[in-house]
Image (cartoon, rainbow over all chains, first blue to last red; front, side, top):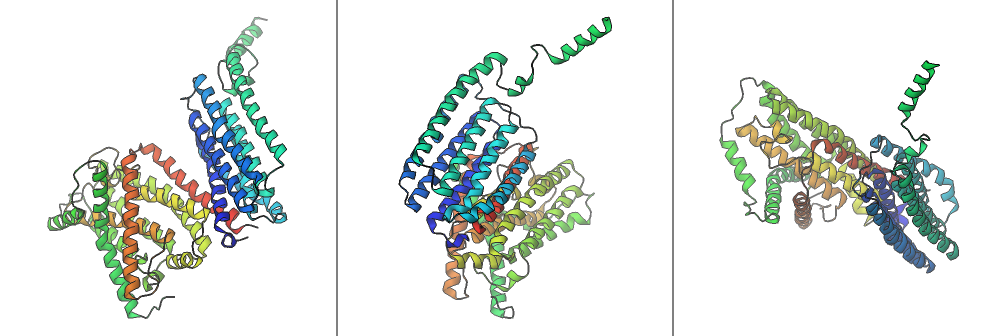
Length: 239
Length: 321
């Protein structure tokens, strides 16, 4: 469906959808933990705005509640909890190095194109005006996954996970005008509980490996690996 | 569509180009005035760039012994290419015969030609500053050009023509449509324009002796009328990017018929739009600091990403299934 057939409000939904996609890209590009949390908050606010607009255009009153819930949880409460955690863990100013940032961005663009092709047949089944944005919501999910893959910090991985949830919620809103209220409430509180549990986990991880770099979880030995190899060599020679 | 044998159209196109060239220093003067006001300095008159140009034209150019023909020819080549570029862009009226001379891709080529000679002239004398400036300028432009072309392709995919006049016609006829792709392309273009015209945060236009300067480093050896032509060409380039942005993305008010009333309206609206764009530029320049040269690629990568997102969102959101 061509954009000129849409009303101005529907065009505004498309604009916000494009901004949600952009916020996913900016999440991928942020190297500071604090800025990625802020970018996540912006994404939540944009998804809430899109939901409210869909509610207005489609005249679906229950979506206003979802929009309010999204705004309260994803744009305010969860970012606030994460922000407090990061300050408490004293990693607020830490800069995370991303390996090959330009390559990650290019991969992200490829993922967007991929989700467009995957979503094409799905879009043909839908009659809603917002069906073009299904591909966008799918790419938000995939970009969140890419963020979890490329990052080593536990906190940014959680942010990536939450942004995947944003994408799923957005997909539900634009493709079927939202899930049943019970499901939505359940998911919302699940996410909130997940944040709290992640918070506890951060402290546990840091206590046991003295860092939030999850790559260090791969090491089994307490000692340095190279030292262990050297020791083994010495042991082999003495035999 | 324009009538190519209409002498009135050609006359208007000529007048429009003259106006374009004559107004460029005024735009720079206006931006300087705004910046000075924002920074609590006493501002020079907006006509100051004209006085500088007149003063420079009256002075004898001093040329280094090591300079070759390229050094002497470069100011004329750079200035004339920039004027030809200005002639192609619709300023107050669309559908003038000159619009058919070149499309946007040729326009980018004109700008690249001017930049090529500028860089050559910078290297010609053999001073360290010139070579450094040329190498930096080429680094920036090699990253900026793909971003600009990508933004332009986003536009042309929507308008289905690479001709600027056709694109403006298309925008006018389709009315007010909120297009996500245009939003991204506009921001991408703004970033590229800032980088290519040597404004803060990529280059500082007011500097004269700094290790980090770009444009000034290349024209450091020029004096007299050569310097005047180079400066004027730089001012024209700023105006070209400004007019391109305001007239392609917000074309409302531009004259589509060649009646005196329509032309007057076109003149007034383009002036208002350019003045508003200058306010945005001045506020941005006052608020931002010049970034390190090594961060310039990141800045231009952002521009490229925005342009790419513009293209993707055109395909995904606007054409659709």
